[in-house]
Length: 135
Image 1 (cartoon, one colour):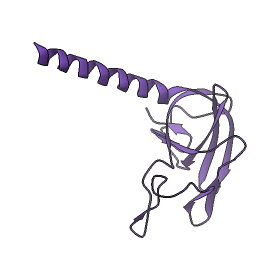
Image 2 (cartoon, helix red, strand yellow; image 1 turned 90 degrees about the vertical axis):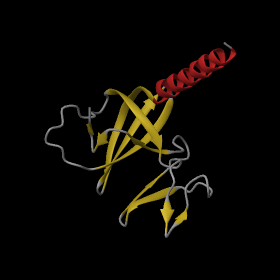
Image 3 (cartoon, rainbow, N blue to C red; image 1 turned 180 degrees about the vertical axis):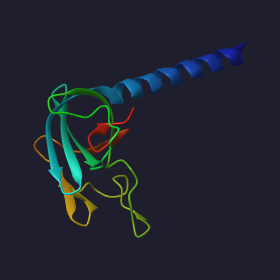
Image 4 (cartoon, rainbow, N blue to C red; image 1 turned 30 degrees about the horizontal axis):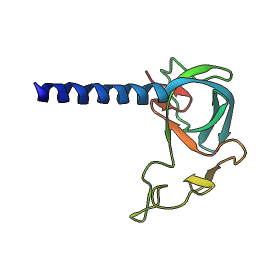
């Protein structure tokens, strides 16, 4: 009986944690600016007076049914670029390994920078191709 209690308690805690993570990431964001740098879109979003800078590679999708538009509101799942492992010549240079830098190169001609006054991180969005939300 004791083992069943521990199993149920563990399952309950896991479910609560998973729900909290999902509801934190998959919230409604307002799009207030869309910019373009070379082969990338830079999408500026706001949620509860916090500002986010989202980077998305330009891609054409002729079957796109839902496109991000200026002043639109969308449920997005943001992932920090800085928290991902990044390797250069086999060396992990991700945030966990080195201090944060101001800009990141997405290709040899495209560098996207933080904005220290309001935006301190860069994000990518799951299920976003260019400006098209993939269902």
